Length: 171
Image (tube, rainbow, N blue to C red):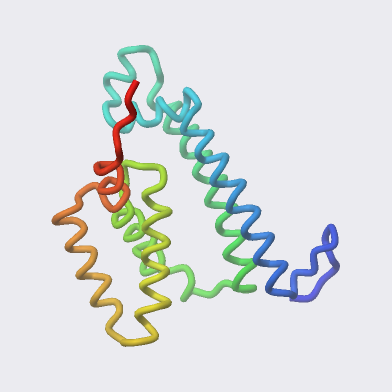
């Protein structure tokens, strides 16, 4: 796309798009992590695990879910903007169930219970896509096999496996 520069950034060059995207991914990831450390983020985990207990101790599970919904909408908007910036236009092919399935696969393979889990899953899936697709057209088969093995033998994903083998901190 051609247009005026914005703070010296010309959105027609790949390197500048990369740096804009990398900056926003870093900022969004930092704010997501900081949100998980706030009382609202901690209560979101409590409401997810046991909404009745959260209600019993005085928190409105409806309000906590609303706050979580708004925060997730903010981060999804940032991701959608970066997606549109990368591809320059959006078609139905970009917005279908397969795209949503890929995101869920990333989260399950990486590990749902850990903040770093979906990031690890995204790295693994992207590497499989870019590296295996150069050698074989059946890379999706290998992805499915890896997903089955992950669900069977690593129910907490790769992040859970890493955390399980982490050296415990000694006090």
